[in-house]
Structures are given as C-alpha cells and as structure tokens.
Image (tube, rainbow, N blue to C red; front, side, top):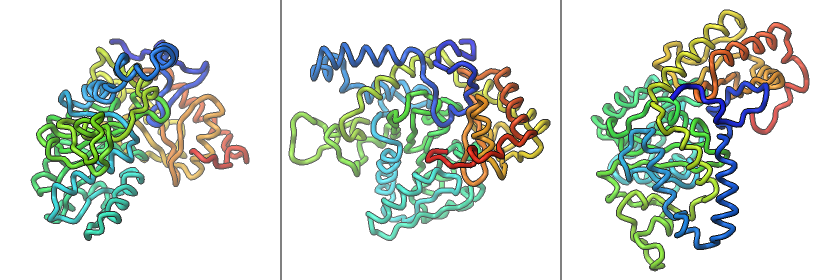
Length: 395
C-alpha cells in the first residue's frame, strides 16, 4: 500500500504533526464508526450489545489485530486497562516464576511509570526484592544469577534508543531470568517478532503509532506455553473461567482471557478496532524503511541548518526507533515557538526536543518544511518570549 496515506487522517490545515510517537492523529473512519456504535449499538441494543455486538469479545478480537503487528500468535494478546496496570500484571506473574530470585533489572532509559509499578510491587510483596537500575549499555553485563525479571522498554521514550530484542532476550533467558518487554514506542513503529524472540511477556499502549486515541486501552502478551501456569495478581471477574457463574472464589480462564481484569472500555476499544483497520495490507518492513528515510533526512537537515542543537538519539538508524531527539538548553520554549508555527513536536525534561516520524501521514516535504520553521525559530530567537517559557502541565 503506498505511503503516506494522508487522506486517511484528520490533520488540521497547515499542521506538520511530528508527535505521533506521543498521540497519534484521528483516522477519518473512527468518528463515524464511534457515532454508529453509540447510536446503533448502545442506543438501540442497550445491554444486549454485549452479545449482539460482541462487546465481550473485543479484548481478544482486537488483541489479535495488535498481535499481527508484533509477531504474536493468535490467542496470546488481550486488551484492556492502562499500560501501567499491564506492566504490573506481567511483572507480578514474572516474579512468581522465579521465587528464589529477588532482583528486577531495568535500565535508566525505561519509562518512569514502569519503574514506579515495579517499586510498588516490591513494596507490596515485602519479600526482599530489589529494583536494580543500570544504564542501557550495562544491561547485558548486569544479568547476574540473582535477576528474576528483566523489565525493559525496547525504544527509549526520550532518545529513541533501540534495544536488540532477540539478543537481550536470549541473554536474559540464558541467565535464568524472565524477559518482559514494554513495546509502547515499538508497536506500529518498528518490526517486532515476539514469537521469534521467545520472550515470556510483553505489554504496550495503542494511542501512539496505532492511533487508538487518548486513553486507548493497553495490551498484554503472554507466551502461549506459559499462560495456563500464570496466576494473575489482579484477579478480575472477566478473567474468571466463568464470569457469569458468579462464583465466590477465583478460577482463571484457561487462555489469555485470564489477563483480563474488569469491564472493557467499549467505546475506546471500538475506536481502536477501527483505527487498526488502517494497517490491513501494510508491511512493517515498509513502515520501517520509510521511517528511517524520513528521520535520516531530518537529522541531516537539522545538523546542517541548526548547529545549536545536539543529537540525543543514536546516529545509527538501526539503533533507534521512529523518533529523533535533540538536546537544546531552551528546548521547551523552542518547541512551543515551533508549535505556534504549525509544527508539533514535544519536549522531555531536562532538555530534549523530540520529533516522531510516522510514514502513514508524514512525507519528505513535511520534513523539509518542519526544518525551515525550526531554523527560523532558532535563527531569530523566536523562542525567547515569555509566553513560550511558561510551562504547561503537559509538555
């Protein structure tokens, strides 16, 4: 399928959107699909929608759509809840698999929420576990025989640094540890093959490159040979083997549905299900090739025309995801000034200007125009205005 597909998205006139790595834009087909779901399914079917419209089956049906993009076998991915909760679910299950070991290993490039969930689990268990955080470059050497679980975000949310999934998973498992990948910045951005990697668990969100909308549900993957032995820490009623038997004690479902917790967010799930139709017929290898071409052009243009900025991302495109980041002391104000000119990127503390490249709706002309505006912001110090220095709650 030819890229980009700008006509499939609602993009405001004059906007160059380089923030799809944080929140994807609205696919045009989502609004009418949601309107139909509200009017026809909820409006006309009422509670019968759980059966007539198969709302109950959405978490595994949509999970299969996501699974195709991450190399997961059918029936190994379930949707629902937030990414933080899915991290907690997977991590608690992984810790149970290595009761004799007490270290959860992660790196300093991991998203803070993952680390918070790990520390919260440790505090709740009160069994002497430790969260050990090393630099991304030290993870391989830190795989000692006391590590129970390796919790890693494949693509660093700040710099775009890309871990080698196959190599790290193999090293972790050879050391006797369980491997848990966070794919928040990977799914829809880089080719992923969970089955080939052999990892035990993976989680991720769907509101970035998958364009599921703000608050779109997260996903969890469990390697199929493990699922029947997993004891969910959050034993929700929809993860029960027979939820409508209303038994007083918990019996987990015999498949990935045991990783469900509560009632699925049907409207959010419907938006995501529709958004995922855009991926029909798309090869992730084509996405990756286009992403690298766009990001390489961006880096070359910025370094030639904006010498104040210093590359924060790996220079080797094979070592980064689908985003490019630059250091700049006045990065927050510069991003705000750039947004005022119609180029939307974002900022990550302390000094990171971050830009995402999504080939579904970004092309070479967008990249060149974006750098035109960025050069103007820097050459003319347009960022040096009080309005651009006032921090908003979301950066």
